[in-house]
Length: 86
Image (cartoon, rainbow, N blue to C red; front, side):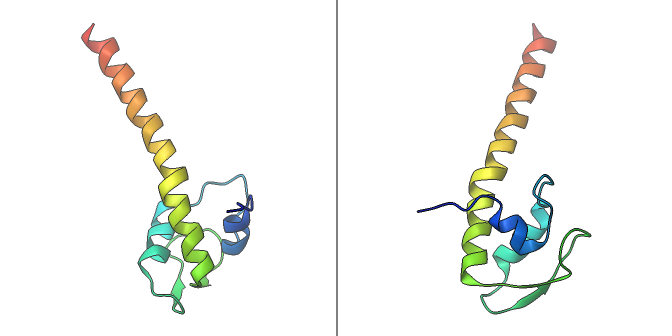
């Protein structure tokens, strides 16, 4: 499997340095293939046609990218808790 860096950003019309809102990713994931959805956020394209490739990229982003950031937040909370407790 070849990962094309920035492909999801380009497909959604969001600049590459900006984080894609989770609300948008979830909306695309929940939509049917072939459906056109309206973007629930103020970033990127207003209307997005959901394709099989777009859905694959979104699922990958949710599983990989957003999990990593959630893990970082949990680690930060653990360290803060340890610092407060002792």
